[in-house]
Image (cartoon, rainbow, N blue to C red; front, top):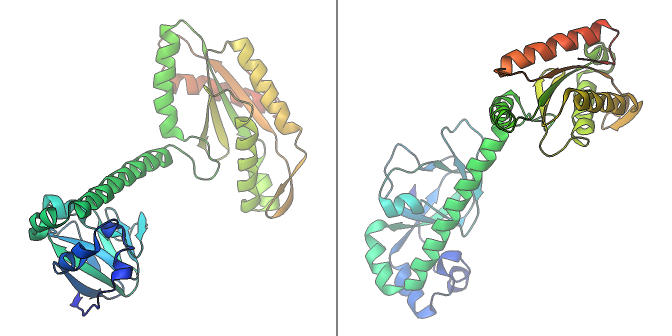
Length: 312
């Protein structure tokens, strides 16, 4: 980071969020506390390994924010007018992320020793800083939520994954047992999926799996959980559902896929697929593993009976 000469442009400064509604008479005095610096492309501005005592205001260029490792995907991009380092600037601790210049950039830097002066010179600027800080915390909370959601969702089909299945089974099995309500599981396998991939290509196979997930999801209740169990297998939990009703739902889902003779995909018109389904009803003291084992055994029987059918 190299010290730079910066010609104050009051019109530009007043458009920056940090200086919103700050009296023009105060801005020149406030800017005396800042120093300008240039960053080379790829230069690390903030790192979790180095304590930070500065607030940075981006004047030119672009900064990327990385969590955990510089090898990971950036979680956000800072544009001209954005601040960075505000949390560690206030608490004088190590930053929680890497901030890296995505291109040649320029920043204004303010040392934390100037905090007292800022409080006395411009309460409005401190209010702006606190607003930016609150916004950053909310963004962090949303990233945590998004990360948690992504950890539970299969990225190809949008169905839940096995991690979520473990969580939702514990919740729903406990609730159904407490309320003396039944719970059913459907295990589905796309018929002859390897042959489908061999004939039409793996990309077509991916689109077929998305078709299956979309078709099934549109016919389930909000309380039902569709999970991609692995490969071409899906599991559906049906809380408060008797075995008879579970068979009816399973048959309706099977028929809905059989009715899709062809579908449109980015690679062109593709043939539809059918599914074999095994059904099992939860028994007292069932674990997820034991219920899956029975549903899987029923699925095996459905395949033995010629596929594109339901057993259980």
